[in-house]
Length: 263
Image (cartoon, rainbow, N blue to C red; front, top):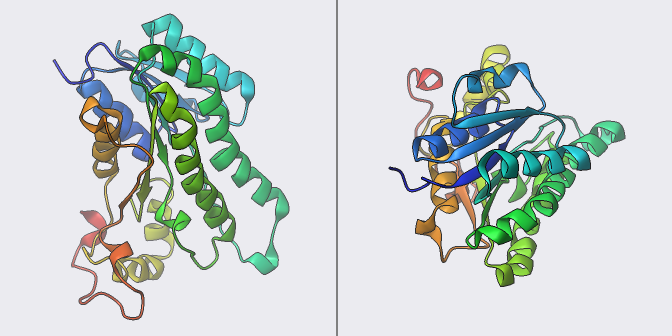
């Protein structure tokens, strides 16, 4: 019996990467999970497992967020953990700004989180110990060249975690955020294949000299959503291999380890 036995969760962005790893980890610990993603085919891994219900749709939709909560209530009778992980990461220079792309990243990365929170609040309140974990990014704690729109959206998410924590504490709902650095997901894997020199540059910024795994972020999310973190709220925890510890004046000592991309 795991620590999430008898508990239920919603995880967005669950078709792959951090979301999939988190949904799997929560289920391993006994949770029943509504796994949501815009990629219906990507949710095929859920089929045939009674611990999961898959729902495909767009997190920027009020109706879809309401459907996720209704599905969780109908299938499991409760909601204890809400993991708002869905996100997109367009690239491009500010001077070449495509405002349609900017609007979309803000809709998914910020509006989608707000809508998810609003829809889930009644059911989270009724659990008595509701926990929310939002995937921010170290890109919300600092800037990246060529990622101004993503930086803007994740900076908003960082402060949304803090503000939501203050507003929801009176209801006993905890709100925390995780700030991943370079993680092996569908966003980073194409970089390694198509521009290996950029991956090498990224690795030179990571003191641990490797890319993180989705499971390593999932472990932190599961902890923050669990009763073990019952007095933790309003925090943003980097999972970045030490990037945030560097002042940035010099690269960390060493270089990419042999075979780092395949670890």
